[in-house]
Image (tube, rainbow, N blue to C red; front, side, top):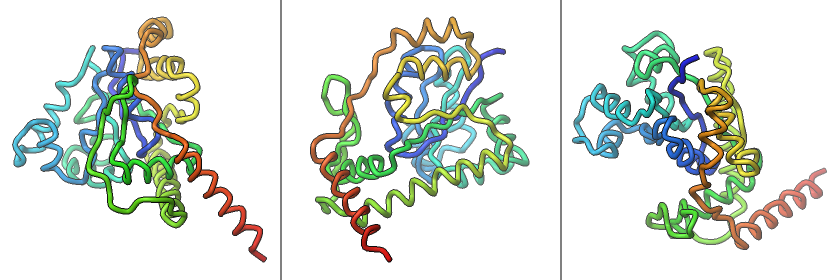
Length: 250
């Protein structure tokens, strides 16, 4: 099978930035990014260096220029799916038809995080500190203005866990509705064996196992884990809070 373009279906704080960096570094898997991150077509255009009123077809054509070896990679967050499909409503009768009519034959990858407490803590810490990603050498990769609300907040963690769980359910429902069988992996698996995970994904999109191993084996991890002692403390406190509430329940 010839290599195919792909959609990386994911949620924030799932390791997708690290994975996108490694996929790009192979030179054979496009340059996957969240080109359609916000439900805002003007923002899509501006993020690609186009004028804010650029038509959708120009935005799509620009995304396709990121292909390498004919493969385009796209990272798609669940919260953007409905808006993107609405913009592509004239491209086909179903979501997969619309995507394939625009980007060609596709494979799907689903990256999720099993530890939802750690995922929620990671998101809240990023929002509060403004530091979202760090390069492997420790320098900032992505830093924005932090929020004003700082400190441990059990209710905020609970709310974010619910959002992440809802996103997982929404992806599962979307896959089932459209009879899509994605290559599913987790943050935990990826963090444990990044090059092996990368090779499996390259095989999924159509490269031979030998090609995948050859390309993935030398790719370094481009980002550094952000979790620190504060993150660990928040996670431990939250788990203790949950256990305490359960013990108090009749």
